[in-house]
Image (cartoon, rainbow, N blue to C red; front, side, top):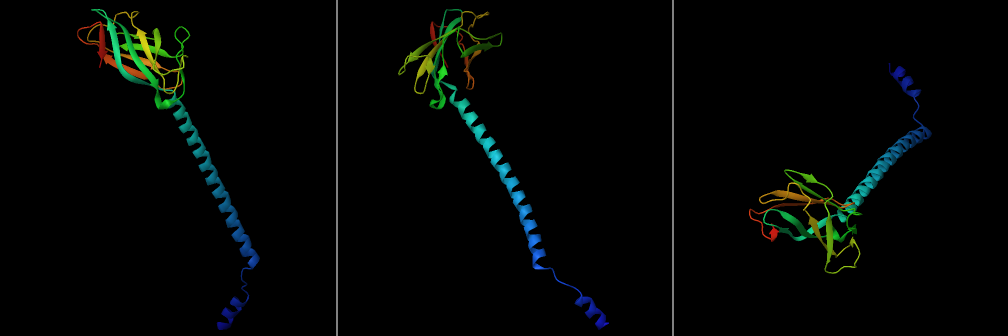
Length: 189
C-alpha cells in the first residue's frame, strides 16, 4: 500500500513559475479595469455635482432681496401704489430693470380675488449707482408698482402678494395685508 501511495505522489508535478505569473497578471488586469471604472464613475459624478453647484450659485446671484419696508399710498377706499427697495443677493449678477414696456423683470399681483401679471412699475435709483438700468452689486433700486389697474381694487383688510420675477434668479415674493383704515401713506408691516 505504501508503494502505491508513493507512486501516486511521485508523478505529481508542481505549478511552474510561468503559470503563477499568468494567474497573477490576470488578477491585476481585472482589478485595474474595475478600479478604472470606479474612478471614471466618481470623476463623472463629481463633475456633475460641480455643474449643479455653479448653476445654483448663478441663480442665487441673479436673485433679489428686499431692503427696508413696503410703503403704500392710498385713497380712503383703496391702495393705488406700493413702493419697496431691492438689491442683489450675495452682491451677485446684474439684473436688468429696463422699465415697461421693454421690461424683463415682471411684477405680478395676487390676492384671493385675482391674479394680474406684468403690472406697470417704475424705478428710482437709491444711493450709490452708475445711472444705468442694471441693478449691480452695491446698488439699490426703489420700485413703485402701480395698482390702479386692479379690478377689484386693493381695499382695507386685504391680504395680497407681489411676485418680482427676474430673468435668471428666484422670484422675490412680498406678502402684506392692508390695514383696516387706509391712510394716504402707510408702512405695510
